[in-house]
Amino acid sequence: MKCDRCREWIHDRVDGRLSRSDARLLDDHLAHCRDCRVFDRYMSIVIEELDRLRELSDIEYGTCAAPVPVLPGSDRAAGRIAGLRTAFARLAAAVALVVIGGALAHRLLNDSERPDERLVDAPSPTVPTGAQDAPGAPARQAPRIVTDARRPTVADVPTIVLNGSTVDRYIPVLRPTSDPTVHVVWLHAVEVSGESTGESGMRNGSPAPHDRVSPVVAETGLCLGNVGPGPAIAGTGRPNHDFATCSARDRTSVRGRPHRTRPSCQASSSRKETPSCLPFV
Amino acid sequence: MPHADPETEPRDLTPAVRDRLVRLAYRFVWNRSDAEDAVHNAVALAQSRRDQLREPSRWWSWMCRIVVRQCVALGRGESRRGTRERGESPQRSVSEVRSGSDPPERAAESRERSEILRQAVAQLPPKQRAAITLRHVEGMEYERIAEVLEISPATVRGHVRDAREALRARLARELPEWADHESAGVVKGRLP
Image (cartoon, each protein chain N blue to C red):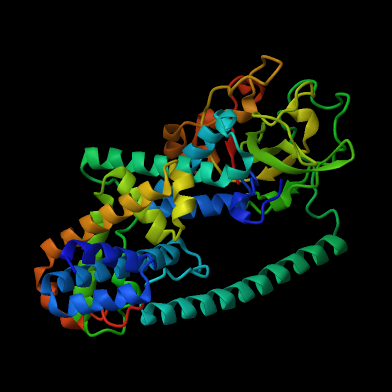
C-alpha cells in the first residue's frame, strides 16, 4: 500500500467509512511505516481534541451536554465517555423536569389561591392608534404584568386566538412604554393553523399587526437600543416599527445596563417613529 | 408542515430555538456575548430576508447558515484587529475539563495541545473552519453540513479533510515530540 492511500484510509476510518478488510490492510501498513504511524497518531490527537472542544463548549455554555453522537471510528474510550455523557444528560434532564414541574405547580397554586396578585394596573403602554378595535381582531386577554423584574418569556404570554384558531407561531417583540421599567411584549402572528402569514408576519389584507396580537406588559430591566423603522408592512406601505431591529452597535452599547441609565430609552409617545424594539426570546 | 426532526421545525425564535442557535454560535466564537450578538444579527437578517427561504422545511439549515456566516465574519473582523476585546475571563483550557485527575505533567501536555488546536481551528480558512466545527464540534452529519453551507457533501468532506490535515500539520509542527509519544492514549484501540 502506498502512503497516500494509507492516509486517505485514515480519514475514511475517522469518518467510519472504512471496511474491516481495508482496516486490516491499513493496520498492517501502519505496523511497518513509521511516517504513516506518526500521521495517524497526530490525526488521532486532532480528533480527540475536537471531541473535547465539543464537550468544553457544552460545559462553558452553562448547560449539560445533550447525548452526543459518537463519531464512527472513535475509540472505545470515547464510546465509554459518550455513554457517561448520555447518562449524565439523562440525569440532568430528569432533575430539570422535576424542577420545572415544581415551579409550574407552585405557580399554578399561587395563581389559583391569589388570582389577582400579579395583575396590577398597567401603566398605559404606547399602543398605536387604531390598534384596539379593528374588525377581525383576535380575542384579547387582559394585559398581564410580570412584576418580578425577570426577563419576560413566551411562557408569560397568554394564548392568542385569531378567528377561532390558536396562533402557534409568532415573533415576540419588546416595546417600551411611558414607564421606562415596563415594556409591552407584542406578539406578531407568523402562522395561524399552518398558514404562513408572510415575510413580516402579516397576512395580506389583514389589519395592523397590533390588531392581531395580545399584549403582555412586562417589567424588565432590559435596556433597548434606538432603532429606525423596520421594513414596510406588506400591502400597506406603512413602516413596520415592530420589526425594526436594533443595530449591533446600539445593542452592544446598552446591553446589560439598567434601562434608566439610558435617557434615549425613556419611551414616550414622541418616540413612536423610532421605537426601541428587540426580539427578546 | 411539521417535520420529524425538531431541528427543521420552523418554530421562529422560541427560547429553545434561540438557545440552540446561540449554542451553535458559541462553538465558533467561544464567547457568550459574541455568540448572542451573532444570533441577534442573524435573526435580524433572517427577518429582513425571509423571502430568500425557498423551502420552509429547511428553515433550520437556513438559520444555521446565517448564524455560521455571522460567526465567521465576526472571526475575520477580530483577526483583522489582531486582538480580541473580550469582556469575559479567558477561556479555560479544553483539557481542564477532563484532566483533573491526570498527573500534572500529563495535564500540562494536554492543555498545551488543546490550546494549540483551538487556535489552529480559529485560523483556518472560513469554509474549512465552518465544516470542521459543524462536523466535529457540533456533531452534524455531512449531508446536513452540506445543506447548511449550500455545498455538496463531497465538497464538505474535502473541506473537513483539508481542515484535519491543517490541524494535524500544526500539531506536528508545534509538538514534534509527540511523534514518538507512544503513550498518547488516543491511537490504540480505535475500531473502524
